[in-house]
Image 1: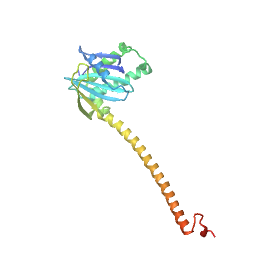
Image 2: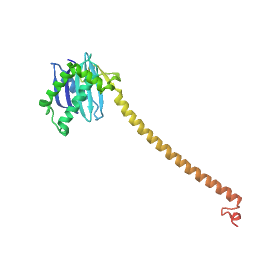
Image 3: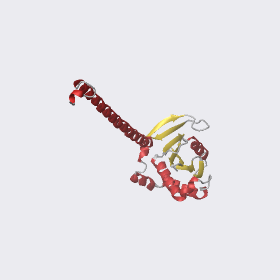
Image 4: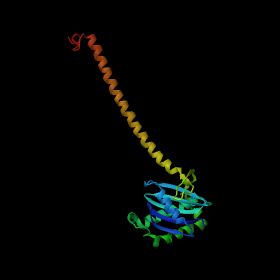
Length: 221
């Protein structure tokens, strides 16, 4: 089975989880939640440990995590996470914001199990994913080494979806570009005003010299 464990959490509060095998995936998953950045920025990350990989998708403060066999292609776990996120939000809506730990577990753990089975074993799942191209961004993944991600000091690899960062960087670049263009425009206006004033003063000085006085007496006789 490609996907062996999954959870849904708000911050570090686990709302529902399901495990298809007897492992310590739940404990590791909770440690990963604690190590995620404290902000609510959307992200797609993966942590590899031995032959297994923990994939994480966070959107609008809601985190969906799963543990999959490292040999499986990443588009399947991330398509699973996208599906679970949509189902969870559609089912519970605003109740997610104030729900207690495991308050949705009795009901939603069955959904997790069913979708894990589907995305792990049904060949149609992969074909549908390929046709829709929902997770095409997962193809662009960079690998960075980090140490001591978990409290036990295990060495993991952080696989960061650079397309998410690229979207954020593109937005920031456009914002900075607009700000720069506004500064350049205002600076040009200031230079134009200074130039006009300088020319006016220069013309007055020349006229005063030619007309023999500040009041231009010889020019207005």
